Image (cartoon, rainbow, N blue to C red; front, side, top):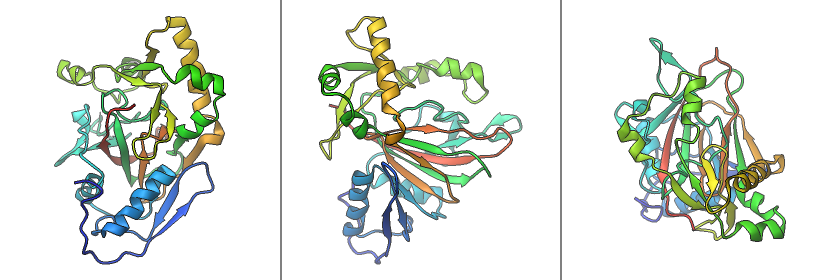
Length: 295
């Protein structure tokens, strides 16, 4: 189901959209995502998402099924390659958690340890992701979002012209073994899983398919090289872009509240998990909406 095929005869929900005092982001207050939305209400949410790039739906005490159903209104959902961390009965949900059960991780405990845009390593990267708080630590656990439209616009005209025609390779495996060596969260991938995540080539600068705005589209987690450049030149250019893309003036830092559902646009933003103290529990459920081929 798409954003245009919404139930048209639903009870009215009175909700507010309040922009944050930050480069990006707004909170949505007074909405229950488990209840049907009219066409006009959904259109308002959709436009707010395009305007603010990250929406925080407050106090969503809803089931995983409601989370999945709301996510599907924006498009088909991804099934993450780490099937080990699917929520039972809901394969569309990836468990993001540092909790262990009988010594085994129940979810991906190091998700977001590097800046990235979700699923950029596939030919059709994600449109957006929705992360729902289940269990939050008493300290830490923040998520940072960096506006890549602002990052593009802040580049010098000369650097814009230099990178506009370039393409880069993105690989899910770029840092996978490095992360496996550091911590216990990531399982060894089967050959079938490796086959699902072959590297993809993407434009270094992508155009948002709904707004037409340009954005940087490289990340320290998944981008491995600039196609056609010598390795040393590629490494230097990527290092420059990585550092520029996450300057403080582009960033919103989200401090989680109970039952927050955070919906961000992977075509506009990168995000980073700030980290949680090892002795504190954190668990969230993530859905990811399929996108289209960047251009």
